[in-house]
Length: 540
Image (cartoon, rainbow, N blue to C red; front, side, top):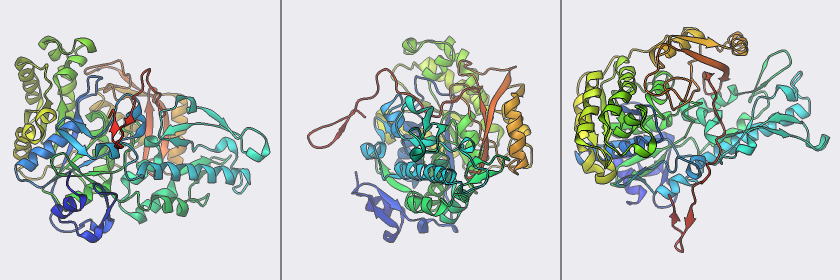
């Protein structure tokens, strides 16, 4: 690794804006953002519907950045910060793999610069201040039953999903039924990711709703006098973090909102910073194109002058065979028939991206078991569906050399005039109409059904003036539908809304489709990490 000061200097960031955290990572001041002047091309990296085989979206993003670097292009990748929960659970680290990694991967994956801890502290401080206001009766009609603000932790702990707090009598009151979510599901994380600066952060925090009075009036963080104290905990967390790829290209890793509940993208300030210092900015959107890409476009890009010049969609032979019905243990066996059976998922998501007007390159992440016939079939499917091109990437095994072909395809695809973006709904549409537009165009459903409690709650939200907010769909990442068991491209079904909630601070309404878990549980064999005698982390 190169000292982080060298990475910042190679970008052209002035030394006064760089605050090193150790030797290989740094915070970058918001004053370094160039609001005027030339801007690079923003490329959103998304993927097909995830499978347990793994598609390798982050590894592909890093390999593509390295490939662009090999071609002499200035490039910055902007990624979400990994959460400790998945690191000790199923997913593992969030810094790529093989020869396409972000460094220092042990520090990025464990604690990093403390941003996640700052978010958790601010979130839980708000919970404590809310309880204190209720206990002391400082807001008329605001009682324990009206509190909606839960607490968070960055560990997957199923025992904390539903708890009773405040037992033990009046010294420990108020007694409430509550629970914990994982930090990435915190609205404060989404607020931090979408804020354009400190003043915007303050405004968004002030609008966060912590509960409702007996007559249905929302109670906000501003009402419980929490905003200033939360700002003091988040003042450095809003600054983007600079690190590097294993070949020395700059990477900004900042914020980590949940892709199922929130919008699943890295920070607005991170993208804006990168665009002033690079020819190409590769920004990753979480999960598949039905989640991360759609939310990137309708929530992040549309409202923050971050409309992209193009997109990359990551696919793999294994993932297509998984959607075609092949069992996990058989995915290494050649099976072109199953691949073609799973192809409708890729075809549909290519259509979702291109229907918005973006030039798209499909990155076929190469695995050792892939055959030439299978790889040719994926490329044929992708290009027939409307992709500009479909190109193999071998970043895991070859680093930047394995990403050059994809980099060349991306440069070619985005060489024309800036695209004209076509959105699926108008900001003035009702929440129900916005949801229907997403259901038909993105989830391939015929209609939307809302249960009675969701309809009632939506009416109350609209009465509060939140009806013009964008929709941030909370649904499974394992299917384009609300049902994780429906693989490929389900059609002719009713998209089912079971609940609806508001993130007034982040600035979106999130209908809940099916059952969504905001506090994952650990698997039967959690990841085991250790430290050697020199202090190096083992097991990542």
